[in-house]
Image (cartoon, rainbow, N blue to C red; front, side):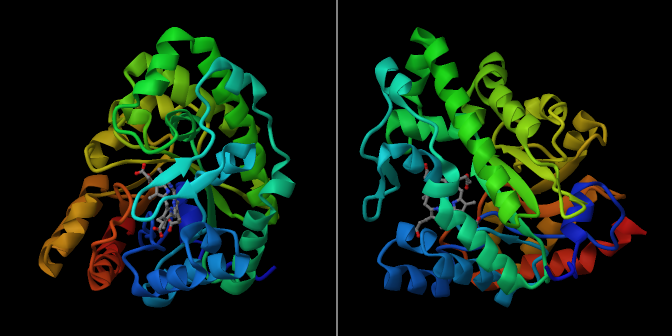
Length: 354
Ligand code: 1CP
């Protein structure tokens, strides 16, 4: 395998010295890029892009051709896991993800089987290998999965939700059934991430997009515990190098100290907690990734640069910061504005590393 030419991301995630702050963007491949929309249209739909390793590789590379990014992220989705469990993922035109066979009753949960991920998700690992070949050591490749809680919200609700009424009802009425579902998803996700690492993912991130919907004790019981189970089961070294693990719960700034105790290497931080405060919570136990408000990308280049400057200043001096947005880039963003952000990180971050 080609020698890694730019290892800033891996170094920063392990809080090792770097000469500038590395940057990548959640959802950096996707709908804000016209070249992505073109590939998706030609392929027919989103899952046809995910399940075709050549196309998944192509859209993974697209943002790297435009911007000086320090990482690639596998093009896939968190919902490939429940799809492999037989729930029948589909995307209704113009709407979000849906499942044909949601998991609602205790009997549904009992019937769920852990799939053989090597077989049922072989297309993902083939995409990882294809992307690693194409990257040829230019930057590291991040693999990912959803947190068991976040994935379970889609499995139980059957679709995107904002109030999580069905799964919260399950938690209230039958917590043991929910814990059993989370355990099945956590084991499957551990297998899935380890297979991504085996195929060549050099860092992995767990996206807990909906953990912030839980009250503190419930967060620890239903979201954090299952992420802990994953961290405990992950391959932490591959080809003589540590494989950093990033956990990201959106909307759970108050939980950062607990998250830092899991043994992960880094935490994603959304824009509602400033990095100086977050750094205080985690006491430099882990690296931090984030956290410019994605809405800033709608503003002028001057405002974007100012936003970048403020995030860098908030983290302050020393290693352990990976620049990112506080959540994914939205489809309405002008691609030129993302260029302004990335150039600003390159230009403004070196003084924090002297
Ligand atoms: O082309 C399209 O219309 C599909 C849009 C799309 C894309 C580009 C979906 C459907 N998924 C993705 C790719 C994706 N999803 C990536 C690719 C890599 C990259 O970042 O460039 C990643 C990391 C995800 C992860 C993901 N999927 C999350 C967690 C991260 C986050 O942003 O919070 C979640 C919650 C999903 C579910 C999902 N899949 C797709 C959509 C539109 C959604 C969100 C639905 C909802 O809001 O409930």
